[in-house]
View 1 (cartoon, rainbow, N blue to C red):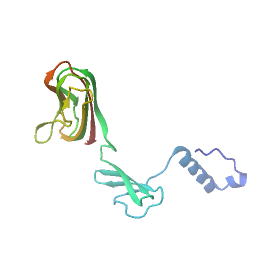
View 2 (cartoon, rainbow, N blue to C red):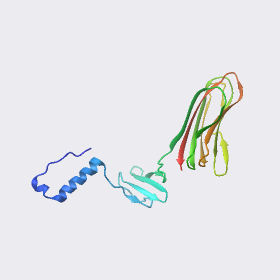
View 3 (cartoon, one colour):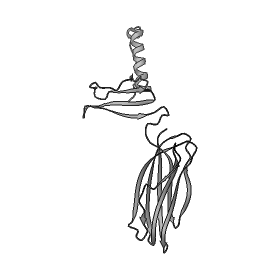
View 4 (spheres, helix red, strand yellow):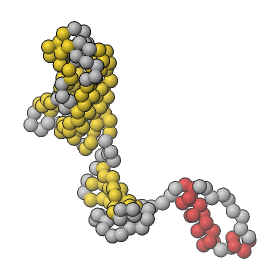
Amino acid sequence: MKLRGYEFSREIRKDTGFVDFVNDLTNLINNARYQMRIVTSVPTWTGEDGEFLLYISGTVRRLYWYDPTNSTWQFIEWNNSGLGQATICGIVQLTGQTGDISTTTIYLPSAAGLYRINVYMICTTAGGGSLSCTIGWSDIVGAKTLSPASAVDLSSTANGSVGTAFISSVTSVAITYATAIAGKTGSPQYALYLVLEKLVT
């Protein structure tokens, strides 16, 4: 929606207050110039339909809006770094894999934070063996490893596995992945998909 230009009579144009109001209204609608209410306490009152505001407390930032259907305030939250939602910082998409994958970096954190790793692996050519995927990182205590997804039986292309894990990683130490096939027989192949998301810095 945009306001077009209007021509007013000479008498109306003499009222500078009215002209200023029209100009301000035109800027507001055409250029989206507006101010948002800022509060430091969580809203508890019954809001108007479509009411929204910005909440600031310490390092926490929330955008609140009132949901009249459920009579509640809803919000999204971020911290001083400006993360309003998970940010994808590493993706792996590998197909036609026939053997182990040695430890490989997904992402090197520039700051300590909380991350979510999503693992999806499937058998694409049947053979034999058990496929596992290991994620590595370092937290404030030291180096850690885990396998978010259960092992995949490579004897059938109907087999696959998914898994998700939350990890707390320190700065400047790589988050890594590796795969291994135990008891391999025949010529199995597999596909591996990983998505690493930054949640909090």
